[in-house]
Image (cartoon, rainbow over all chains, first blue to last red; front, side):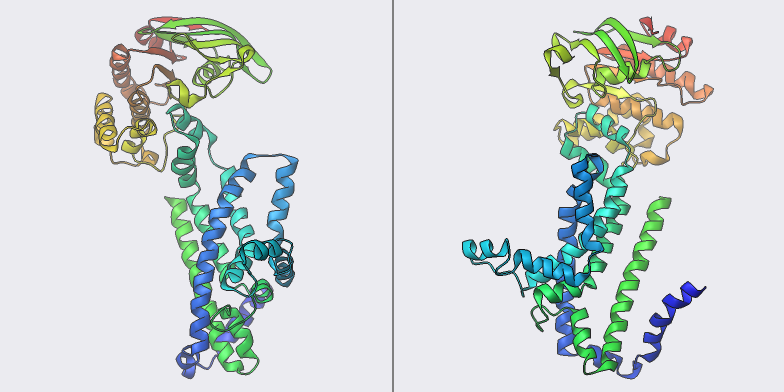
Length: 249
Length: 210
């Protein structure tokens, strides 16, 4: 009971305090519109990248059980428990202009990642991929290897087996993993503001925009917050819906 | 064309000696009590489980021989299996299941589709084409698994208890379907069954394991 109250109270309070009369005008400002577009762009690309990179890795983690794979799993999951600001500092240390890899990137190709939209995406992938890996690896572990054997006797190549037998059998978990990674990316703040900065129209995402607005207009910050809350909860509800129907199918 | 297995098969600590040669056109029945290794023999021939020692060859080509370090993977062997637990792909339609082996070997979609329909017709399951594999009854699924195996046009057909999951009524029916399929099958066939009646009516000779 207390737990429910504890979760609901802040969420409800935002809704109560929101100045509904100027809801639309608060949302419809250049800064909010710009950062919403950036948030949508970067979080979708990040979720896609997390899937493209995370799915093969999850597959490998599910199918190997060596000391090496256990260590790698722990490392890959770590960003989930890392304070986001620390993740941002780590990304700067790696890809910053004088970073371990960033210096090479700049010297060889003149590429500088920090404080660009690419940096926003990288930060989001870094912190959100663990969510995808956790969901998808667990599903890969539960797939029926008998079906893969059957497919092999029917002459299917490993790639064909992966895409036409394995992937369809983990589809609900895959979808959940991608949605979780997207939600985490959409709400990302600490790692991206550290690594990419908060430049309106360039790297400022919606959470960064809220943070900035809150410093001078608390009421408008409430409106944008409640908007983000609705989007996130709607996506979560939609996911649960499709998950439930996927299970009964 | 003949299939020959000489050596030891098994999983873990349980091993059994084996020495058998099956000619094309023959249907070798495999009998033996539960757990003796009938299914392991099938899996060894298909390439799911390696031979513990000895040699497995088909038509003069070695498929599995540890001492010579020869190993042909299942997809190189052209063995089709009707597994005891069927293993139909649950998310695919019946037609897609039957087409799977043909499509895996690079046959065009149209050709695979018409072959698959033909094979489904052969096992009296053409009315199931658009059903999902997941919702089929035991007898229906059994027919589809048989159609999927023969559609792949294998050299070796392995049938592991192909009549066990069915009630008595449709069992007679499916047995005659199976008899027709086997008599038309040009390659080597092996049939595992615990039912003496299946073996006498379908196999040309029987090997008892254990």
